[in-house]
Image 1 (cartoon, rainbow, N blue to C red):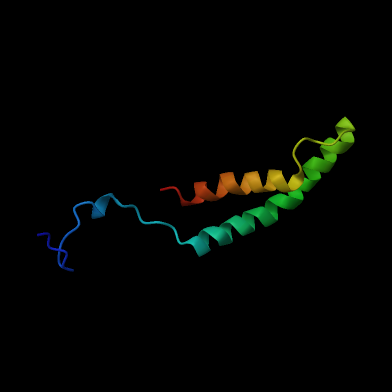
Image 2: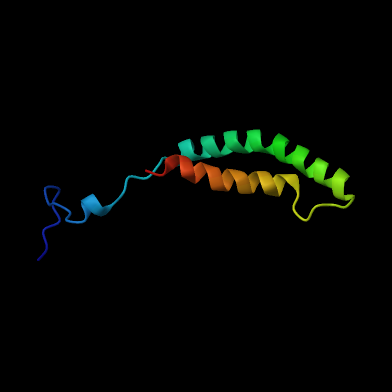
Length: 77
């Protein structure tokens, strides 16, 4: 029988990486999104004026993409 007591040592314990708390990740994501949205709105507007047609990707999608790329980079070791 296997011993599943509290004192047993998990041989794979060192292999598990400590995860970042979801609240902290969400906070950074929201902050980056708040800063990226006005910038991407300006870029989108400038592109609209310059090319005289709607860009394929809107400012919200661009800001979300920026936040999705930048936030994980903050938490990398």
